Image 1 (tube, helix red, strand yellow):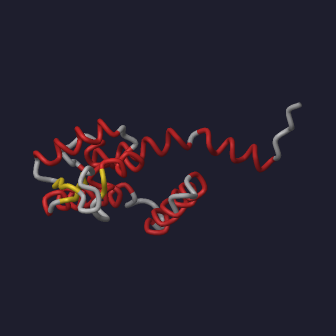
Image 2 (cartoon, rainbow, N blue to C red):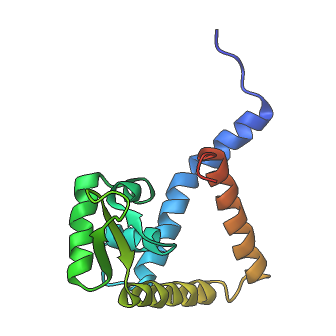
Length: 151
C-alpha cells in the first residue's frame, strides 16, 4: 500500500528535481572558469590530496574513480610535476601520493579564477557574500545528510 506523501516530502521532492542539474551546471561553469588546463578528474585528485598525502585506495572515494583509473591519473600528474608518489613507510606495498608546490599552485590559481568568475557573476546580486555563504552552508548540510560517515 502506497502512503500519500506529506506536504514537506512533496516540497523536498520538488526542490530536488532541479538540484542535480543546477549543481552540475554551477560546478561545470566554475570548473571551466578555473582554467586549470587539466581534465576534471585530475583536478579532483589534486583537490583530494591538498590536506595531505593519501594512498591510492584512499583517493577512490573523494574522486569517484576506480583504483586503476586513480593510478593512471596519478601517473599523469606526476609526469607534470604536480604530485609525488612514494612507498608508505607503514606498508611498503602501498603507494602514497602528495602534492608538490607546483600542484598547490595549479589549485590556487584555478581557485582564484573561479572566485573571480563568481564575483563577476554576483556583481548585481544583493548581498553577494551572504548568497555564497548560504549556498556553501546548504551544500555542506546536504553532504552531511548524504554522507554522515564522512563528516
